[in-house]
Image (cartoon, rainbow over all chains, first blue to last red; front, side, top):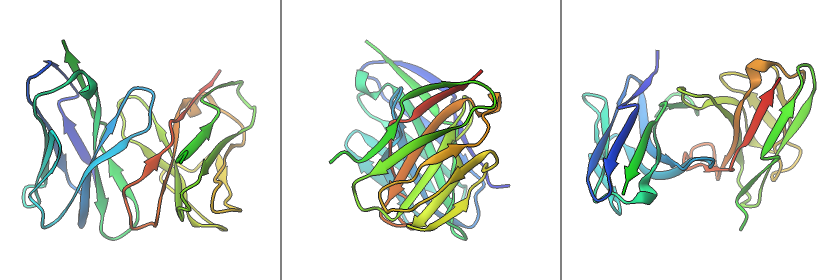
Length: 112
Length: 113
């Protein structure tokens, strides 16, 4: 069964610190992987997209990595800010259809 | 540009009532979809449309109907509301079914009592 699992479920860090969120998937055949940021009470917003051949992609202070062999991805946030408080969702698309498999998300809280 | 607009933002229904959640986009996107988001779970696809006049079922379509008479609008109808449909509903659109960079609306929080 195609699944996307994220860890940790929630994370609290101090402002200015770095953190790494994990995503493991069993989706096959794999097409691409996205990370979304979802602020409380809002819809998700795309941060990065990675295809099979990409290992690393950055978007400002956000850096996503992908290891297609081990089916793992991570999202690293550098020098966290209060505005980074949100849920971060990993989404994997299967190559054989148009549908996406969504992770349950990691809730990140940045404390001053 | 308004992007994707969902109305209403909040709604309380009684069991058995029907209602329509509205979704409109002004980006001329061909692909539109409806998701529900429940605590501790990933977003689940309810229905989607790859263009005007074309709709299809997603992962959890039971109890919901959709239509796509125009490119801009994609309403979601709850036929007979049940407590299990209490959720946050998101509408999303993209330029094509192959473009997974969805633009989401801000959601409708629905409570069925």
